[in-house]
Image 1 (tube, rainbow, N blue to C red):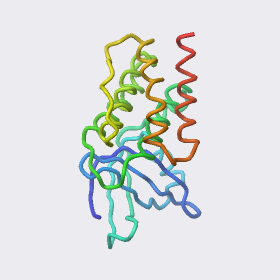
Image 2 (image 1 turned 45 degrees about the vertical axis):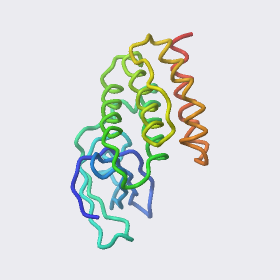
Image 3 (image 1 turned 60 degrees about the vertical axis):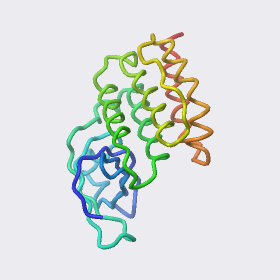
Image 4 (image 1 turned 30 degrees about the vertical axis):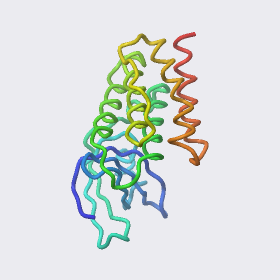
Length: 200
């Protein structure tokens, strides 16, 4: 695989002493992974934050080899990772995407929806400005991966949006994340608890 394209970094895990394995969602190539030398160093640390928009250059010598990846930061969402509710939302959206999307299958609509969701989380003054986008993204993910479901009413009030968020919990758990580590679904539970406090 050799490509240069915009991407959303959705997961990063340590590899070796100072490197990282990055998983990124691209519009035309779907989910791709790459080895990032120095990914845990001072220079690359701010880039390797899930939710960041990056320009990725992937190079590999064979299909069997994990590509080497060079990442350049395009848009940082790091400032919102210090705020509990936006951080919980970004972490959940990225963890859900990283845990469910197959590698190298393009989903252009999901790429656009995730990018829009992350922008909404970072620009809205509260969850009232982005919960509809979160519910819409989750429902779209279910449909795109073949689990059906109806489109939620995104024009409903916050209470109704939260109820739609709650109703999606079971299909996400039972279909999208069946067999995934428990901490992935725990991220959604934590987000739900924070959202619930806005209603009580």
